[in-house]
Image (cartoon, rainbow, N blue to C red; front, side, top):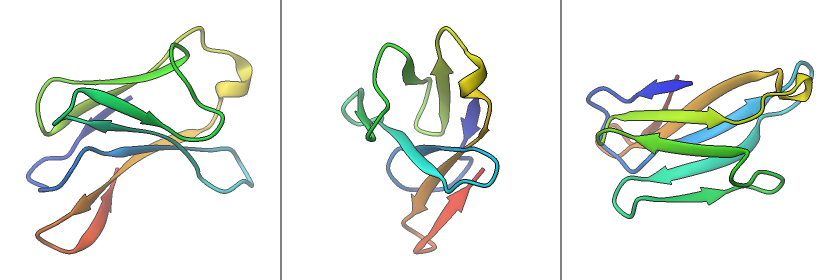
Length: 88
């Protein structure tokens, strides 16, 4: 999944997974400053990871996709200039 933050200024995005009828689950956060990934409970590498090509372009990568991976995925970032979250 590609996540383009455009002109939003802030730290790296957080990726979430939401299954039908469920609440969003925090998957991971990509820190472009440190080239590292922080994982939420139940999510880990190498199944889930994220890369970035710039401060605004991020990609969520899911390896060996299974039926259980079916969900809506989205990214969210804190917009420090607007003082609010922006999501995609």
